[in-house]
Amino acid sequence: MPTSARHGYWRRQTCMASLPYIQCVVKETFRLRTVGPVIPAHEAMEVSTVAGFCVSRGTMILVNAWAIHRDIDVWDASEEFSPERFLDDDAGGGTVTTITVSPMLPFGLGLAVRIVGMTVAALVQCFEWDVGDVGAVDMAEGGGLTMPMVTPLAAVCRPREFVKSVASASI
Image (cartoon, rainbow, N blue to C red; front, side, top):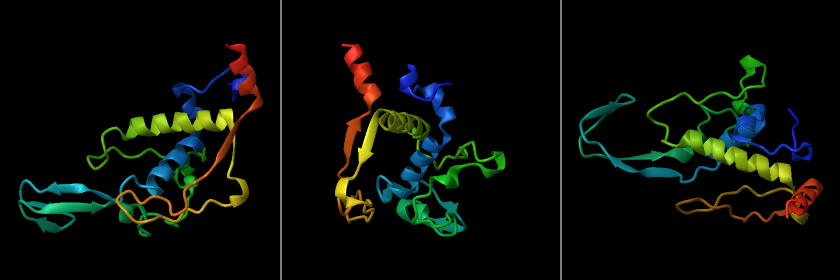
């Protein structure tokens, strides 16, 4: 399969299987840059046992997603951006480790991975990206409910030459 729009092929959902690294980047981004550090509170509707702890009926439960995603017992080099951690080494490194279906996963995660993956693939395919004189991107997190970056990302994108020609030919 030709790998670029230069050959007349635009990325489609069916092409995502041939882009395992993009899928890994999306999963690692979701892990490292959690939308919200704390999952909204839930109330225990009945007496339950969770990980050996007795939870009484009516107890408010908060889950610290930020801490789970950076747990050094679960993730090697948990503070580093490393999409390779999601490549399945047993399958020769060319396939993406699947996330086990679990009641703990949010509904819509599969759709989110697909949509964000297709968007990232299209942005990389069609534009050249530069962070200018900044050099390295500062990934430090600020405070607050959504933990924004301390230094906002400023990036410049320029359309690739083939995009200009395709766009002008279709007008």
